Image (cartoon, rainbow, N blue to C red; front, side):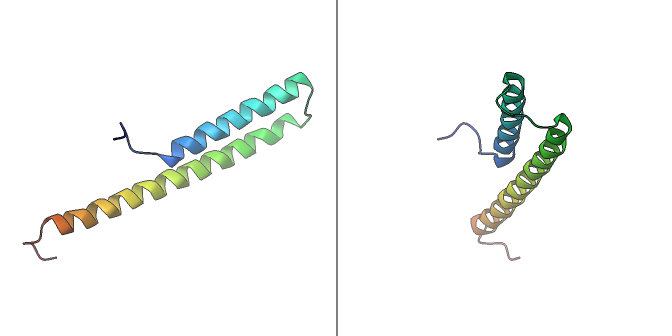
Length: 78
């Protein structure tokens, strides 16, 4: 039994931050050269994707919870 529910938004945020850190590390080591102002919009877009993923996961959980509530109460109509 898992301790908590899986949250895809947190996974996406973690991947975005890890990717940003790796990009800056690669630039600092001289392995990769990119304009520094490019990474900020990419990270903001990643955070927006994380927000959408969290919103969809929340909506899906709420929909499933309401569906199980209807099944659990057979005497009620609605």
